[in-house]
Length: 257
Image (cartoon, rainbow, N blue to C red; front, side, top):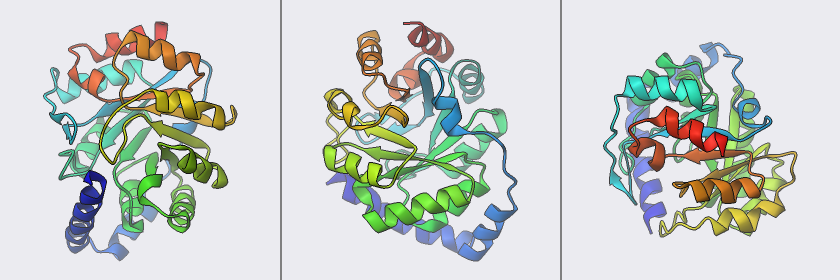
């Protein structure tokens, strides 16, 4: 199962990271990083639809993604049109890295979420140290104790947490955590099939006062219209924005629908 493989590879990578910067030093770097005042939650939970524009170089389902614009142009477009930026930092399957995140952080004032497979508190200190405003918690790879501890750690460090779910049981777990931001991944992380029915089916379970994010598989105008009907607060969009020649025009168009 691909998810198990990703987590196994992440454990190996973490050993390498800790050799370069040991956990004590990484925690010190996180504690020395000043709060930015940017709120991932507030940028998404506002009137109208919000878009999280993603930067990723590859995925297990798509293979290598070749951007049609430079990184600098992309971030300029995102800064002018979307409400937050997601950056993949997973190395082996998404070809991401912390340096990508740091470079984007340097170029934008938008809230940024570090999108990775977060399984160790070291990653949370690292996220804070590189300027993340939010992190991703994937319910499918964490037990209830881990979710609770990691969620609390994120907020202790001044970061929001997007709790990602993909079925009824995981939504219930996110609600038991009293998560402020709950996402539904339309991609099944076990076999990488995609269906927007995930969002349609699970949306009624999440109270309207929460920030509800639809993730993955959003590529057409009809997808946007369907999910707007579900009163989704925000879309996390990767493939469509990565493949277009004009990310700003596409984001503006979708917001106008």
